[in-house]
Image 1 (cartoon, rainbow, N blue to C red):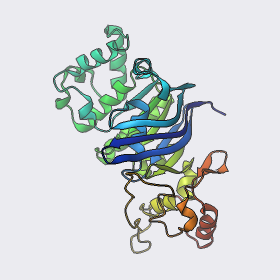
Image 2 (cartoon, rainbow, N blue to C red; image 1 turned 30 degrees about the horizontal axis):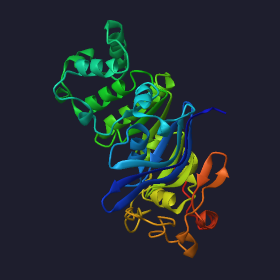
Image 3 (cartoon, helix red, strand yellow; image 1 turned 180 degrees about the vertical axis):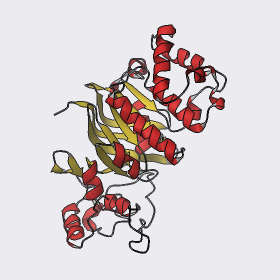
Image 4 (cartoon, rainbow, N blue to C red; image 1 turned 60 degrees about the vertical axis):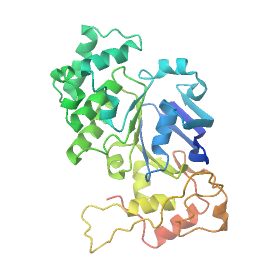
Length: 336
């Protein structure tokens, strides 16, 4: 079995504001295997991007509260800014959601890259930029793009460029945070497949792919973790999550997706009623209970993480009864 590159245990990070604590990441636990692509999905505000920010760059008002995040055996939550700086770009890196915001508008891309790697003790000489040019060819970008300003590139070109810059030091672990959200369908597919190619050619190690689009994860992720309102809901193999979801929230997400070959008149899509709870000073209990058709008084207690298999876990008091009821009623998803 592959070793763990990342081990997250009961990780909590809150936004500290005048009115109290926004519990955006509130006790999440999971592992990431070497060479694995783990998809993380959920509605806006579920804590996906907060998780990314907690792991890579914690800026006020976001504050680390407790828990562990061991990267290659080192708990990065305990590192000083100076020590953690050595991990960034080389051991851990992020492909940000908005590529335009990542660039300096006053510098040509080549100068931007040179300044960045100098901070990590890398000499941006001819040999280094030869490597950069080879990577650009992988993503169908002409090396002449290095002599341009970011404003001269299209949205898709900027996203591909920042993808290469973020992985230029061959990091062991990469976070891809909503990198397809602002792209057209063809560009989304190219960027997603590019992440897989970087992994397959061992340019990067493991990756977390954060998105609200489950259809993309179905194509590239080995496992999927579902989050809801700062809590962990379910994690498991991609086929299991899509075909046999256990958590009622996962089931609702899957049911809201269009299926190939099924017309609207044959099977109308169902949305998820209600809205996610406000996380300011929120108390105990399953946070999905306000929208869950299966809620009972037991759901006022925070559910424990339960093991289904060695690689499939769920956080719901009633998942067994719900799954059996759904299966017996013919509501089980077929993953098509």
